[in-house]
Length: 258
Length: 170
Image 1 (cartoon, chains in turn blue, yellow):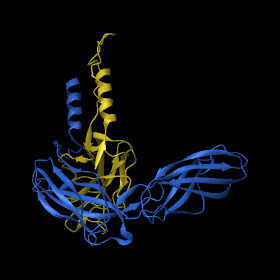
Image 2 (cartoon, helix red, strand yellow):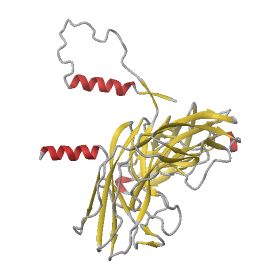
Image 3 (cartoon, rainbow over the protein chains, first blue to last red):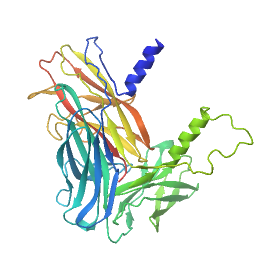
């Protein structure tokens, strides 16, 4: 029994598949295999210039040949938490391109060069190196067919970095003890230097909350988290946000009512 | 770009010591390190390992069929996220549905990570399964899929899924 449990654990560790149907019908098969794709390095960063910006290595450790496609895409940023995902409906291929952009990769590795063809708008760009790998000649043609997508970062930094931001009206999220403070902040500069600091809340009750740093894509808005308002008495408050972006410090004063 | 991960190496060294790899150091033992700094540098990398998966191809009875598989994630980044999305289409009416030629099932495929609530795959934004706030090495992530059918569905169905590993910050 212990051996079976150990074997099950080993199978799971190797990437096993478990399938069942709740009506008791025998269904999907399980198959295990250490199959993977990797991308190195995770970040390519270079000051904007036409020509080569850097290179990435894509490794195929599976037993299958893969059809690999590499596309440079812009990010979409979540306004609430600042997390990013690549925008699959958009490509930067007019400005920045990978060479080769599409190729067949046998087990092994290949280096892909990333080149700037034209200067992106504003002279900077922050996006994803979107690597899509599809196994060729896999037997499973029906049912669920998982395929690989691994994203790296590309940062084409401006020749003259400029840290600048603008803040909107304060936002109160949640209700009761779950109420929290947020400050919508737009990055009007051209860097992704993290933006964070602290907020001093002054009024019937006073406190200072830490504002976790968030990297905001230039032009995007993210709500900076000013922390919980739990335990504050009713009344009029002033929140003084002290925000640091790179070496630049900004103070923003906003009022709110509880 | 290189990322220093000496803390990991130091952690591994501490784990070895904790496991009793070198438990018998006498008080007057010389410095076993000889003053040598323990550390290392690794290239920043992301790796995704997926198993071969087969299942959810035919629906001969009404009910819910389930399938789960374990992806493994390695990342040197401080923040990474794993998501899953429809790899066949990004916008059509078939988004998130198992298909057989021009036919599709009535209900979308559902995905869940661990014990989290299942999410339908017919949303235009891929559901985030999980994210990590630390570097990981071969971290398992169990992805559960389920498909509900109200009655027998003729034919064999398929769905290409993108399992995506990406950094969470720009």
